[in-house]
Length: 511
RNA sequence: GCCGCGUUGGUCAAGGGGUUAAGACGCAUCCCUUUCACGGAUGAAUCACGGGUUCGAUUCCCGUACGCGGUACCA
Image (cartoon, rainbow, N blue to C red; front, side):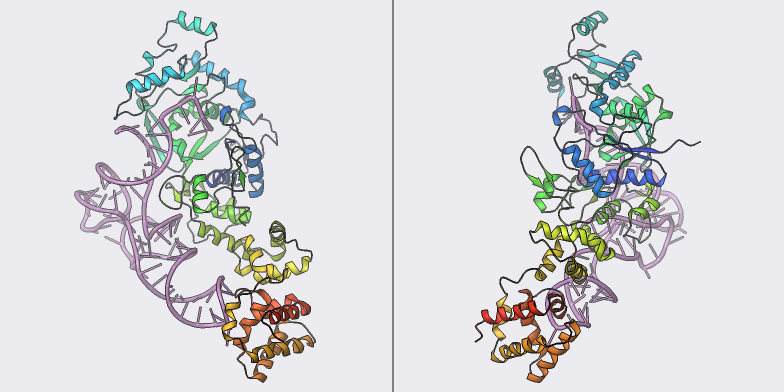
């Protein structure tokens, strides 16, 4: 029987989740669902100095918003818990010691200063970052260079120490990446990475291997920034559990900043005025808020869709996918090798498409919330439903519903007078006075009736209807934009329409 | 510096020894609309460079350039 597919998303709770992080979660999720496997959320909080309050909750909320709920997580325990690495601390020491016993790792007592001394001593323009490796380790204070007695004495005295992996001198480590194929590394270029830190916490390198093994992870997918340290992980697998037990790897391409080059960072969001985090993230240290896609008016379906195709496609022309379609069609092998620049305009296009795709009823809760956030609570749900239908095609973001539809719920406070004054005259004033009366007696207040009445009256008075429509629009909405003017008038209702016409007539000083 | 990974229009990208090198976003023009959008049509714009291999390379190989990532007791 085949082993059950198990994948994990393993973020560090150090801040908001940006596009790349969510996409990694998404690809893991899609792969798990496609194979009826498990999707695990593991919190990698081994660096206590980088602990950020709220970051972990942010991860849960983001996954929830995106619909990527894990099968096992710190919140939803399973048979392989705990799922927070800080709570697994004691597990790692045991494995680190095993490596020491096997001669594949060793104790090292170097202080931060000693390490810095070594680096500055060997640092040259050609070698700006000297490594702790097979050459230099003999000159450092560790169990390999010290006598057994001295090491024993230091250990007995509880001297602060780390455990480092002993990287073999001349080997080639191969890795089969599901996206990149065979990737190989020369071990003589690798350094003796710290596995267990002085505070007893593991580094990522040890923790990822131990936990992937213990949690029976079958496929380990992560960002490309991990590729250079992958050979270290392969070696740890080999020494601890056997390479045949190792999960299959895939390293996802990075998401790059829209302009220039480099990995997308939170700075770019502020700099370019675009969201890069899934949801608003308030930095507890600075109090600064970095805006998110959700608050910018993105639908989760669109956000997920956009992310899925940023670095993957199924080879057809299809661009719009529901999560179900993604589960059916996604494949790791078709994920790109090269990084992709993020394009906010295209992201908005996806959202626009999803706004058109959803029903008015499905849109309703999002739009209602958007109005509430703008301090314009809507009491009449029916009316809001009607507005959604009226303006949806011209909205790219949920927040656009407010700008496009607010006219219905608030009387214009000011008018774009420049649009009408130049051509305004007595004749037109008279037209609107009469139109108030005429339309007021209409049997049915419907857009088509209004338009007919309006045009008939214009013809009667010998004025081009087109020249009167703009003034009417300004009266009703205040500005030159918006849905067809008679549609607006229809949803506004009789009383409000007349009131608004009268308002502007008054403002223009009609006797 | 060294190591790794990349490189098809401005961006996302399909393709993969012989093609008019798809499609989408954006842009431009036109149509629709007497508003602004939506929508529709059309258009401009691409295989990083140099060597091979081959009857033929965007596609395969090797270099070079460029970009990114890594080079921490961070993940």
